[in-house]
Length: 235
Ligand SMILES: Nc1ncnc2c1ncn2[C@@H]1O[C@H](COP(=O)(O)OP(=O)(O)OP(=O)(O)O)[C@@H](O)[C@H]1O
Ligand SMILES: [Mg+2]
Image (cartoon, rainbow, N blue to C red; front, top):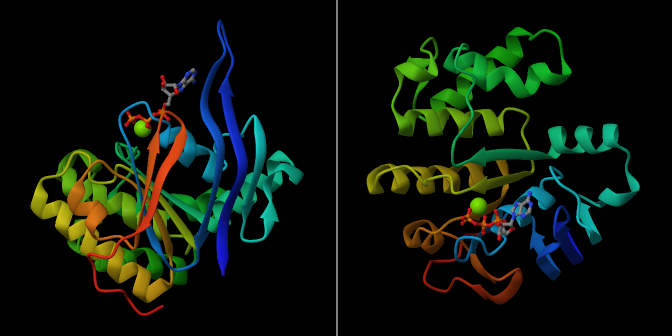
């Protein structure tokens, strides 16, 4: 089943001068797969991710998420589907500094609900347990390590049980052991929650853990290959 599809997507940033950064992108992502997007700095990867996550709109072309055509939605509907379907993990994880680890994980829930039930609290705690930092729930982001902050961000991305996780350089500032752990964690999450992962990375270790590698150059897809180096996972 296709969960996310881009067809004929172009992106032109207009300002003092026009800058086309994506050219006729056609991509579709099967549910429950993990894809890497690779390419040089400035090639358009983050722009592509922002469009896939409905954080930005294409200049032309169509984005379809879980059978919903994004261009036919109003802002409220877009926010709703974004919150319900997509979890984001960014390189700089944007945890809120004055909130604890547990509160940060609860934020996606609190955006649309004023309070949290015991059940919701249990889910947040369970997610912290899955990412291995249950003991740190009362700490502030400044009181934990970079890798632990990253894992908090992953738990937060999972809070609303999204069908798609978009991760932009999720291991960008992590050492190689922590990077391996994040990759393993993504694999476990995929198995347990049937999540679709799309991960921008410049890290070969991360890319080698995915099912598919899409390469972007100067705003165009220049290669799109199944990753044959790994043992295929059962879907
Ligand atoms: N708001 C903007 N206005 C104009 N140009 C932009 C804007 N945002 C990005 N760009 C340009 O679009 C191109 C693609 O940027 P993008 O951030 O998608 O690259 P990237 O592949 O994610 O790079 P990196 O690996 O460095 O993060 C770059 O040339 C960049 O300068
Ligand atoms: Mg980028």
